[in-house]
Length: 383
Ligand code: ADP
Image 1 (cartoon, rainbow, N blue to C red):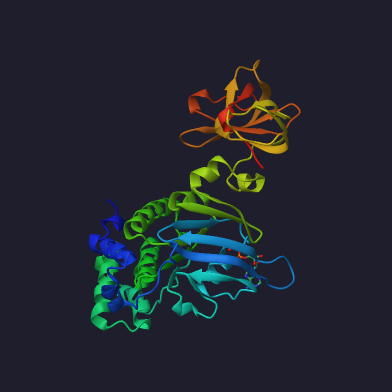
Image 2 (tube, rainbow, N blue to C red):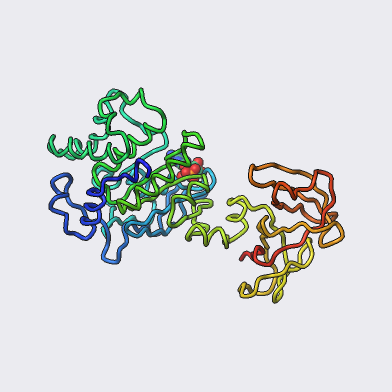
């Protein structure tokens, strides 16, 4: 069991009791009780949020977004697509030019940052270097004038939750990057925010540590029932952490859905490319097949599409190598080893390149000629 998930049963129990409204009295000793969700179970609602910096395209362009209580939503998108601006708007750090933000069913129009009941955790942690670990975690509680004994109890509880029970009196400068990240998380969670917001929370950590922390965070959020709005540019991270991913492009939402749903059926070629798919080709779609520069691609039964011009995506797993004489003839122009599989770049004579994956022992050499056929279940017609 991981450190996070050793997560104190009482905390989880209290979190759920609070949600059911039975533990409010106890909670209000620590922080004033706060409405966490609207009557319909919505923790956050953003309506038509618009932000303009100067004359160009809006940084946020009439964005609508709802987050249900206990839902973990990850906002993904390329740099400059408006992710941080969206987070800052919800936190109250960025004024809106139009639209509204609702937390727990209440319009936040005139509510300042410190009264919104949101916890914030940024990429660079922003820990206070002059305070020790406990002092950092206690910060939000001190701001809310929580009495010293209740504060100490909550800090101890949080440090235990994030696996740093023995580090209370260490200086934050002496901690590793991963430990600092845990302190920042404990600090954000200490005042029991109704919404926890994370901005590139693992940005500065190495990949192995990130993968472990993402897993641990997922377990922690599930145990505590935390409502989370996180921003990341790393799709692996978002897909591992989120109940729902929201993909942004140019200040607007390009697609929102469960990770698997988005992975299976990207809304358009922008989302498909952003997810790392490169096998995209124009097609004339008829019933059951798509005519493309790669030939006639089969479509799975029940793949509902309207006939006509579309972009078609073929997932690399659906590109199958057969003998040189079968299917579409291609030359292998690149071969990259990924540990468990090999990815191949294949060049047909008069058509765009195709990406394929195959097992190491089956992989052809660069310069080989192969035949390629396409599996219907990995052919996706985009809108
Ligand atoms: P992301 O978090 O997806 O990288 P941001 O929300 O930071 O995107 O930025 C969205 C757009 O708004 C970008 O074009 C960015 O340059 C612009 N922008 C963000 N903050 C400011 C600011 N304070 N002043 C001017 N332009 C800004």
